Image (cartoon, rainbow, N blue to C red; front, side, top):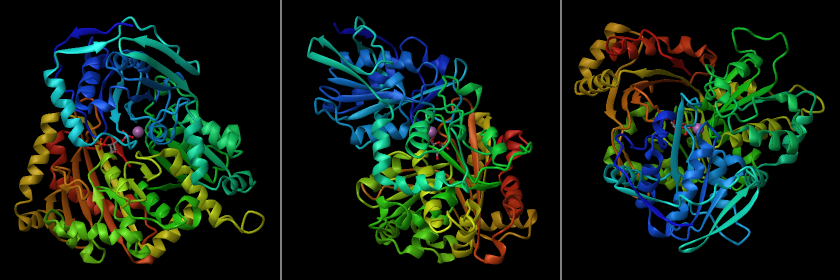
Length: 608
Ligand code: VG1
Ligand code: CO
């Protein structure tokens, strides 16, 4: 093949967000739009990550993925990449990409050095919906801000890109290696099975035999909904073929380009079919719900965990996994190195870390304590709980902690849970973690005795550690200007806490005082980089908390996220309905922020 240099001009707005560049498909399909971003990425990487390198290119299979993969292959060839690895049919879940970079060795001994992941995650797909692309590094994790900033700068000045226009299209539905010869020598496209590396990794982490016993017990019933995302490609292999679950326990497990027209976001609003099956929906089916249900998002890095007629909040889920990991999951049998959560995630994980006296937790916390930016945290939760190991929203911040051996288990309130087995959150891993905990708790019960249910495990956890009542309100696609004004208003309000408390007392006398308010900033304890403006926080004396931030994953308008949390230690009060328990704080949050005034919305689009 030959290398062509194509003249181009910059596009506005190619700034990667929380997790890559996400736009409407029609934006991505404009001539040169994708090409500009890919070339800007190559130009932002060190030469050895491009010339002679092995690049993974795949995604969640959404509309436009196949075209995009063929374009990126041609551009990689032209820039001197040695080989491109593609999951069969262009499918690899986000966690599987991370696993492939870290674990796979090609037949010629090659190792992956980075990846383009083609996904807009939980956003809908199809010709009128969203597409996305992000670059992951050699450690298997998302590119850090230093790189994404550099990519963005390049997109603003780009003048040309390189492409091997005459390179024949490779059939990515066929497993095998196709070789070409170019000006710099050989170039290979290696199409491989999307699941096998990931399945192998999961088998090395969990005790598949004990999970299989649980799944084959007539007492235990199971259901998994991939929402037509890429998780389906793994669910059948793992849950049915490896673990013996029945095929009928899989819902929507055939990946589709448009996710069946749905919103592939695993929460109580969008995973309707699963929610109904689990006895939680409004139109409950007549059948007895399964004991356990779970769902994934489009690219299978998110998870929702449900018990029979019972919802597990993601913040509780990661805490419960951390509390039980050492006993229930062989990978962690030597202990946890540390845990971390994103800032808006509830402090349930912190309480577990304190109880377990995690080895690195205190180390990490003392780093935080040294840092002025974090001193207000000592006030959080009345200093009952030590300062938290919290990072800004988005998985890229966990990777450094993991690479430094400081973190084993981490999670986000946005249905993301994972561990240091890879550098992305991992939806199927979370399900296997829960199945492992259930198998462990029911070791003695499968042949006789009452099954310990998901709900039993969660309620027991609350009794031991207290409960963090938690909810998130999303206002999607509001006017971007109005959203900015609301945020600016909240920052301004923070300058006088006495004023804030006066307003709050006028709204509701039941809530405690705000003792601190700030904008969250993060100094990475490993590389010292600083991330500013990561969310506006109002911290209350009793440990309650309100957090406001703007989403960085939307493709249109602005999305305001409001996170509301309240800690209850008294075991006799941990069983309340969460929306009811949080009602006073919700009212305070909405009125304090003048939500309706600024956005014109009387209700959120999604409540989780
Ligand atoms: C959201 C979530 C964040 C998550 C990110 C990517 O970001 O809040 O926790 O890491 O999505 O998830 P934002 O900026 O919209 O709040 V995924 O599954 O879309 O890669
Ligand atoms: Co996702």
